[in-house]
Image 1 (cartoon, helix red, strand yellow):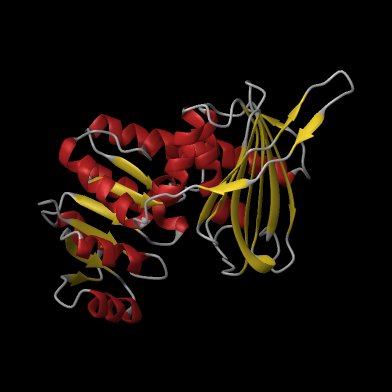
Image 2: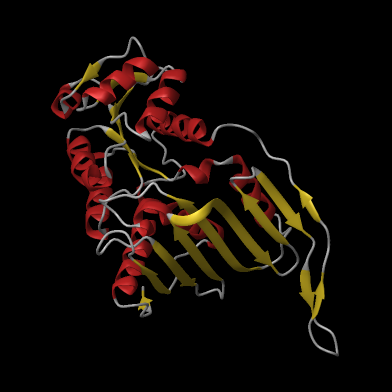
Amino acid sequence: MAQKVAVIGCGHWGKNLVRNFLELDALGLVCEQSDEGRIRAKQIAEDCNLTDSFQDVLDSEISAVVIASPAETHYELAKAALLAGKDAFVEKPLALTLAEGNELLEIAESKGRVLMVGHVLEYHPGILKLHSLIREGELGKVNYIYSNRLSLGKIRREENILWSFAPHDIAIILRIVGELPFQVAASGGNYIQPNIADVTVTNLLFNNGVRAHIFVSWLHPFKEQRLVVVGSKKMASFDDVGKSLVLYDQRVDASPDGPVPIKGEGVEVEYDSAEPLKQECRAFLEAIESRQSPLTDGRSAVNVLAVLQAAQRSLMTNGDVVSM
């Protein structure tokens, strides 16, 4: 692909984007303010063009930017890039308020620019396979979804665990259900830093009767990244740590004597081994080439922000239900 991008930030996550766009022959420029980050960029891409000035990126002929800076800078940088006529791929969250997210979406649409958000799990072959099973009716009617995203660290200072971990799970759940929830409730606690939640549980209720809950924590004794979908015919479990997707032939049938649990064996479902981030980067390049919206476009990003903001409101009121 002939398209070149400028990656903003070569830190904890940005370095992975630098590597992937380099491997896709699409790395045009890296913008990094810290000496450590610039050294890291040169280690990954020895011949890459480097700058410590975002203005240099705006003034360059490169027509697309990839923003992997701290979350509190996403809105400002993405807005400047879009107004400069550049396509933008922004790591999650797109912004830290719904109003900011909507503004970025409006600017992108008015300027005819691609706006994409880094909900990388939506490009995971295991998640795509799970979507396929659901669409084909393998699980029957989806009744309940739950996700656990748990580990010890990395503890952030700029956003809480809800905004740091939950966007991935919210994005996947919204994609499975196909609509926004009408009620959101969240509870949690701050144990390390004042006013920054370390643990949250968010409950979602949808108009079609589906319920979901999302448990996220960076105060957990072991790492777990698991999504479970309970259907009327079968159940499925995607384990991103164990790298497995298992389909269970289990359900509850009705009988004259009451509900009867039907327990069957779990069968592991194979899926492609492609790197999700590589697939996501490729999707951005394809979008800026074709001028078609990517899977994780600005609208899907704003939908996730709407749920996050409702969950944050509920969290601040000790779990009060918020209607959307």
